[in-house]
Image (cartoon, rainbow, N blue to C red; front, side, top):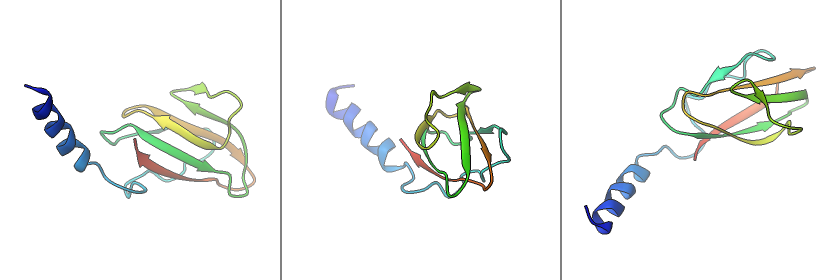
Amino acid sequence: MDDAELQTCLDVIESHKPLGDWASKPAVPATNVPVTNTSPYTMQVEINANGATITNVKIDGVTIGNRITGSFRVRSGSTISIAYTVATPTWQWFVV
């Protein structure tokens, strides 16, 4: 396979990725409950506190530093959980 054929294959794969917020994304679970990325793609999960008090975010059970909102990369088959109180945060999932 030459470079042009490889690029054609990559373009076809890229064109089949969903665009925008993943329609089949999981609902935000109860606090500290992990959710698995069941899509075949690595996802960028955007977390918004939306009035919640978030104390940590974990990917595959590992606390992600001091970041509690923003963008988190979750590989296919990996988990994400949010520890929160007061209200339920919101999230959007985008294909990377």
